[in-house]
Image (cartoon, rainbow, N blue to C red; front, side, top):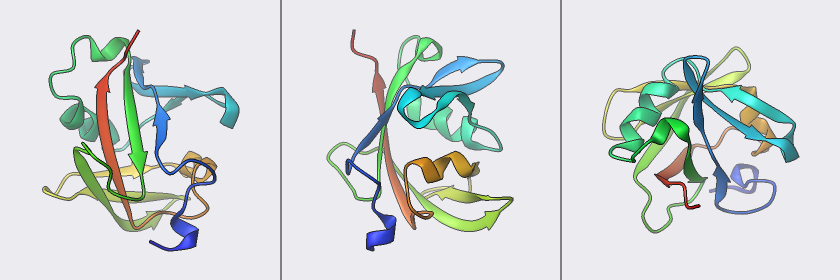
Length: 123
């Protein structure tokens, strides 16, 4: 991991995706993101990760980091840049998804790998 891979603040970041407009979206008011959609293969990656989370479409918690952390479920690896965003592949499959330029609100540059975990939202 290089300094450029580091997120701008915390080493484990958190978002709360939910289902809207036919895809997974998330809000992050501190980053100026409202119903930011996941597209181009990422919804399938999310479906793989959320597994048996009850009522996941109402929202769940997703943790992600450039470093492995206890309980991470999937590692996704950088593949290539395209259209201002970056393609990533799930480490144990050929499943690929494109992360849009909103990723740069969290990272200075596209990380070489991301570690992800999803869990039911705690009320």
